[in-house]
Length: 297
Image 1 (cartoon, rainbow, N blue to C red):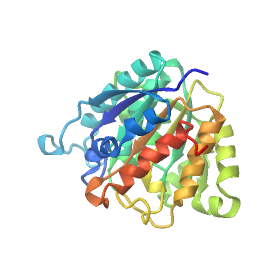
Image 2: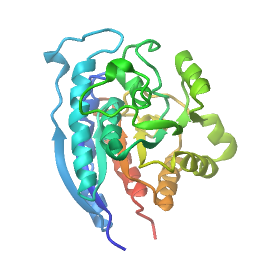
Image 3: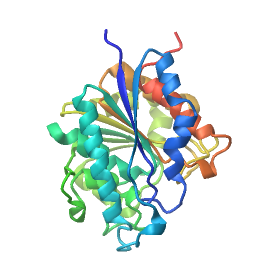
Image 4: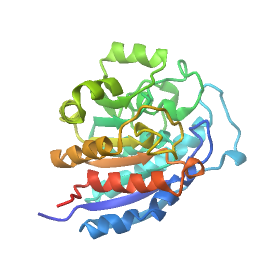
């Protein structure tokens, strides 16, 4: 069996979030030993550096309904091109964030061959639009945009819709805004809340979610580190109590690896400013190893 080949793509962007600091996430994850951890397991790694991303201090906010939208989408077009190129070279893109708005770039790059499916591990739904968002932060609109629900997000180099509602599964949700709740009911997007995991367990939930997202041109797994409880992952953009345990998070990614469906992985919302001794970045490294099939034995 040929070795897994991974392309690391960094996106040092924090314009989509309400709190600064996640732009340092890619550096923190690299510093925590990402490449070394994967290479020790026999995985071929190519680190392709960071895409160019603007600083908030050098740009105007723009519309309060979707703050820094133009700058975010410009960055996402660069991410999309890098993801498409990596996949064309036979590598699995591993995109490091930064805030979750970068997933619009990852999914657009994957959608070069048509719409696919997304497994969205997140405390939040990221299913707001500029019309429903209570904050105007674009990281809370990334999945809605990927579904083609944000008309103002259309740009050359981005492919929306990149995923289909029937092939989206949000897992670990603990907070959904009213507009998101309405959209979930309207479109039939699968949302597995933390209560579902409490009642059913990680394995049956992930198995159902993976069945849901399969069948398109790709399967994308996007991991917001806030899906994990903040006692374990304190350094995240929007911490929310009651998340996955350390072992539950690992099992979820181990099950992804066992399914053999992973075409790309995002690790997002790592905020070193809020972290303790790079703990959350270290967890991101270990979760990536689990997603790529690294085992104890």
